[in-house]
Length: 113
Image (cartoon, rainbow, N blue to C red; front, side):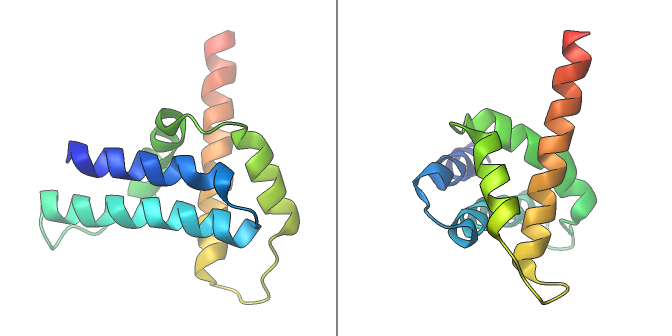
């Protein structure tokens, strides 16, 4: 399981190398894919990785990956990624990214009080 986390960290760190919002979101998707499959192998095939599980894991993954200028990547992605399809997979990734940023900000503010 530790190797899967390291693989997910390295995929997350590659976000700053990506040039477009779509490729940044696809890089996050790769990291999520690695975690989903490793959790299924660890917990069993009947374990379902849903939004509740992801929202608990992703903020930790973003912080642990130590992505340079993570907030700038989020602002760039949210400002320039448009999709007309509702239920688009990249829109779901974008929403998860937004929720992670909000959660990290909440924890940071709570810690500084």
